[in-house]
Length: 174
Image (cartoon, rainbow, N blue to C red):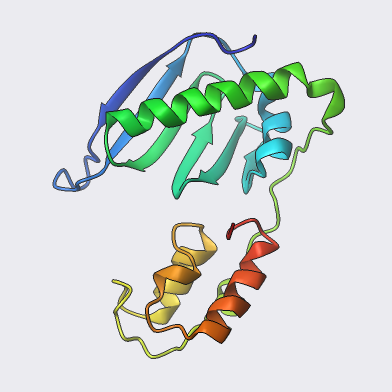
């Protein structure tokens, strides 16, 4: 077992303390840098950095970044959700470590969706129903993994499917 213990810190974003969501930083008791390229392979990380080492994933609508001695999770409902995700990730870290002989480590970021390719599939009405001021801003959020096809209320079923197919090659849509 590589990762045994961690302590967590739950806080509201300083930039806007009125946000309803919370963030979590888990401080790891062990250094897990050696498992990061295996996690990148297993969980399909969309951002991998060699120095300083880190891998970022989008899981359950949350951005999770794993560093050698900490894990950062954004936009959580509450501490219970943080606990659930941290325990799941602890299991994934340990499983990847135990099976590392069977896993091809990946030291690069996955290809990312292009904003203009996403925009081509959107209605381009700038209706603001998604909560963003323009379709371009929405497309940027989608490219970053923070939004998906189902988050655009104006998108007809045909274009929603086209967008999901496009994003599917990047593991954005399940």
